[in-house]
Amino acid sequence: MVRRSIVHGFEAMHVEALVASAFFLLFLVIGGSAQPLVPAIITFGDSSVDVGNNDYLHTIFKANCPPYGRDFKNHVATGRFCNGKLATDITAETLGFTSYAPAYLSPQASGKNLLIGANFASAASGYYDDTANLYHAIPLSQQLYYYKQYQSKLAKVAGYSQASSIISGALYIVSSGSSDFLQNYYINPYLYKMYTPDQFSSILIGIYSKFIKDLYILGARKIGVTSLPPFGCVPAAITLFGHGSNQCVSRLNQDAKNFNWKLNATTISLSMQLPNLTIVVFDIYEPFYDLVTAPSKQGFFEARRGCCGTGTIETTTLLCNRKSIGTCPNATGYVFWDSVHPSEAANQVLANTLITQGINLVI
Ligand SMILES: *[C@@H]1O[C@H](CO)[C@@H](O)[C@H](O)[C@H]1NC(C)=O
Ligand SMILES: *[C@@H]1O[C@H](CO)[C@@H](O)[C@H](O)[C@H]1NC(C)=O
Ligand SMILES: *[C@@H]1O[C@H](CO)[C@@H](O)[C@H](O)[C@H]1NC(C)=O
Image (cartoon, rainbow, N blue to C red):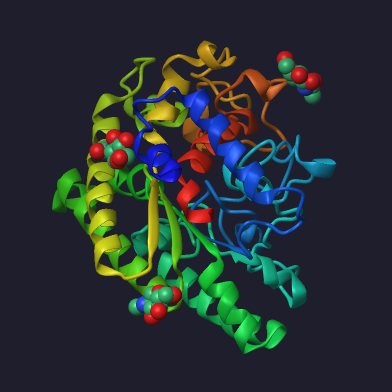
């Protein structure tokens, strides 16, 4: 009953109280034991969760050079699109992991390292395979193919029976869709003429639904999928689509909301169709929107510009690099690290949301 009220009472209760109770529950469950709450974490998606797969691809969407990783352990630019940890890194720590599941294309993805899962995500990928193809990233269908390959490798390392309990006990995270709009639909005259945003959303949702069914057939039983963020509020979108305004682009946010509405409905339907599947939407839209529109409430002072990126040149690369001038000395007060991606400090806020909304995936 406690679990039920935590998940369903989200809107009614105060967020901090919720987070506190979620952490309290986790504390009870973890107790002093060294075991994480799930055996492994398996991740699919885009730059919001890529931990370095794009380092091994011929794509312009890489984050393997400074200032990326500036505040990460040992200041390493791992390929995460952030100054420090991703929201899902923080979630993994909260669940009791002391190391992160490796990027599947990295040399670390072998042997016993595979026992705690693997990460298949690729920046600039989406639900729609063509989005990834435009940027030479890993399409979702290929991520799924790699996951099948991972299962065979896991069976060799762990033995068939342990592998199968890892596969069914693992937490699966899917975080995708922003690139399909920002880096494809809105700038692709062909798609834009062919489909309305609503039709394009439906196509993406169809792919999502099929993907979840495929994962289920492959043994996944605990899946968390993130909703779209209010991507009309990311600095790059304001620059590109805001017609000179400094405000969130409401047309884009409306498209994100519409997608999220369908995502909710489809997810409920999937959970009814697929026995023993626990599937949860991590609704990051509202917490993200609150952060961007009232940053000072949570101790942030800048939500319009990335720490790295001056606010005017985002159009050239979307990303920052060694030569980016004016990178802020301390990103803690910035919601955005670069012109698209949240800072580690913002990721901490989002991670609290993931844990609160996903509590019934892990206990
Ligand atoms: C999706 O469901 C969540 C949780 O029930 C809710 O908070 C959110 O507003 C819904 N999103 C949309 C766009 O309907
Ligand atoms: C669901 O779980 C129960 C209990 O673990 C098991 O007996 C049953 O076979 C499962 N059903 C499916 C379709 O996996
Ligand atoms: C950045 O600022 C925060 C709070 O203002 C502070 O706690 C932190 O130590 C600073 N980090 C660095 C690297 O200076």
